[in-house]
Image (cartoon, rainbow, N blue to C red; front, top):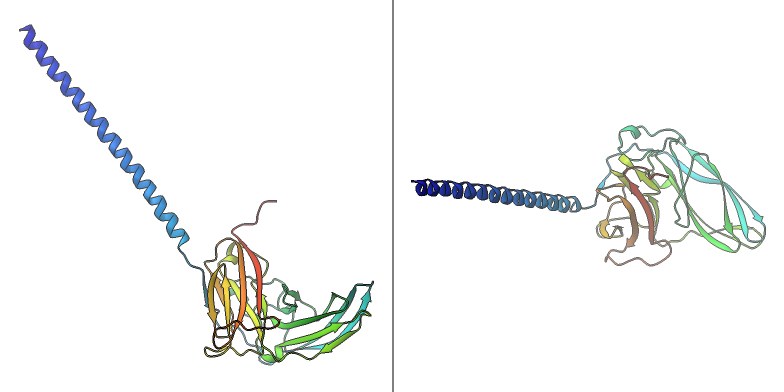
Length: 286
């Protein structure tokens, strides 16, 4: 009788051990599956985030100023020391109000100057200076030759593209500080305008791409502009502004090149320009 009771107890004990072992095994398998699912989700999310391509899209219509004109009214030069020349340029602006906000500025969705409409002053295709007054003084080395492109800009930095709203000055200065005007070239040129500088927060969502072409009417079967943005090429056959979207945070290298009707790089002065801008979600801590 005692032996039978002992056998019954042993059988119950083995059953309890088997059940406990099964529970532990199921728990381990479930935990492994859950971990695997979490890891898979993380990988997919990361791949999706890096797959969004950078794009450019034409900017919608902007207020036109068909009668706006920009001309150079006066130039003065003065030798400074032995190695530089100070030049003061005075513009004449008609039918356009500097420092005024362009009518659609609040709804454009891109970086806008709080100081309003201005002149883009581009010396030798270096980053432009925004002029809110029609007089500006700058310095160049003695015995040098330069190209100065100037054009009227809306408050959100989009250029006016009617011919009378821009002016090119080709000039030289000698060792005495004398300035001489030179003939403007008949060859095609391109001047870089936007993007420029640093972009923060919402301004990074739509970054204006804009440039000024000279002696180069753009067409699908003629001159074109190749814009290379961080290694991605875009071919542009219409002279108009574009919004750069989906650009990653950090440095963005922008290269603008003029192409001929055969798609070959145009040779000559100011036909290939590269500038770098910075995009950040927030301002870096100092």
